[in-house]
Image (cartoon, rainbow, N blue to C red; front, side, top):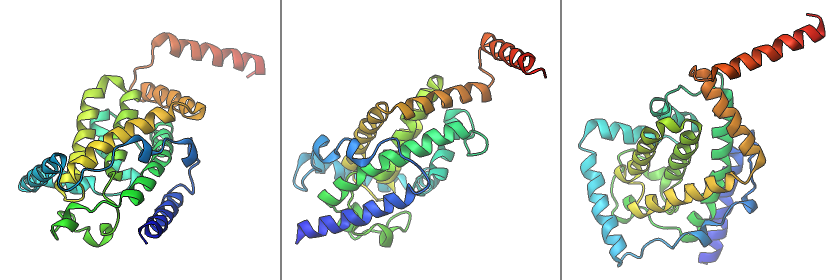
Length: 261
């Protein structure tokens, strides 16, 4: 019975992931990505020392809700969209990202996230871990109980997205890595604060994101797009080396002479 449930749940989640990928060609297929069930340990048992830490962090999260500013950030971090996610990184990254303003960076991020999002499907269905608000019949900060009930807690999809985004953006703009990673870390903590995940879900998800980004580097298309995104960042922020600018101008002049324009 449990096996049948896992299969059905995995099929439903896979269909949801595929819908998000309809307009994006991922860098790697699910079969080409590492299997997180094999990579990560099982979530802590409820009678383990690790779960005792989960309980402590659950209490910590509820205390954080008393801080209006932090609670508001946690609510924003709960929005499940690439647009909302990347908007949170605009300031630490040092540049506003959008399909129109930064098309190469946007393509890198959306395609990469669409690719690695698929990794969470199998372990969520396989472990089907009970979420904190379900175990304690508690109210979430974000009123997502109906939406999230019955969906596995391990790993955290939001945390995977947040840490994946941080890893990629820090590669595009290494100079801002400290602030980018700080925001990425906070993004995962938000899942504990709203009551959606245990701390161990979040911890494992950061590792899962790192595994996913490592896999992305095995794709030639990803590496090519990363180079385009890095170049676009330099252009948009006025950091392109002067000799490179002159080189491009010279090439353009030669091209015009050859065409007679």
